Image (cartoon, rainbow, N blue to C red; front, side, top):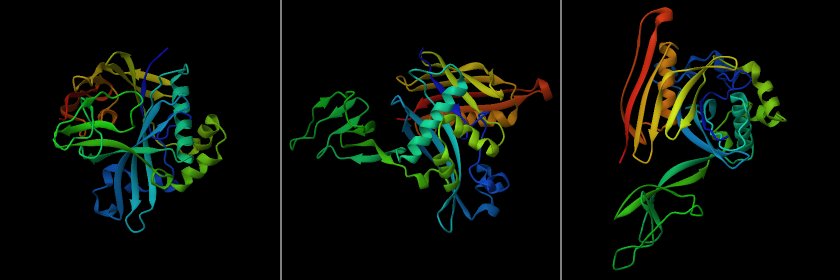
Length: 307
């Protein structure tokens, strides 16, 4: 059986809950992203990076890391992780197992220095092969012009993203070192874990508030969105997400009763999962109507790929 899961979580263990990797994270309000523009938190620097890693089946997974650093020392003091876990082959039966195996693969990649970023670099078609949305080109001859060649499965890890007749931009892989991806406490705990189950159990005491969304592919381009509402209990949002990358389109129309705070978190999850703002430009809206148990919230997006 082949299916795809996409998860929003912060290294979610045991009950798949958001967790912090330093004890101070529970009490320091500055480790909340919403505080990054506060004067009281000006001694911290905030940024986000998307890292990639391969699991045991060589399937590429990704994790969005929200980082907080000391402006004085530059040291990473807090990290929050939002995973997009893809299960393509030999998928475990339960969602819990899917996440557990994805997290174990992340742990191994972190300790073995196999996390990597995808960064943009300029490409000069006069001296190197450049790749564009339509394929790759040979090096330009002195008289101008080039010969287009198609990209194959055995081509370079460089991936085309943009280009024109005068030059191109390519995406290349760059190692993300452990010190830039996780605080020392998390690295030590990961190193002491013997297996995936041990990895979960060892971090149970550091779990924070529940925060987990997932998307399951139901047919080509269409996803349903779920939220973990209790241990191993998922609730579906009404509506669906339609993603058509070949046409450069993304459409979201979701309704749920998870509350206003979770509605904003759901929007943030979708923005990270589909790289909205860098890959897509969207018109979007979020709102909640009603009171108490009758509260209904919506997230709507109509997006086109950025040229």
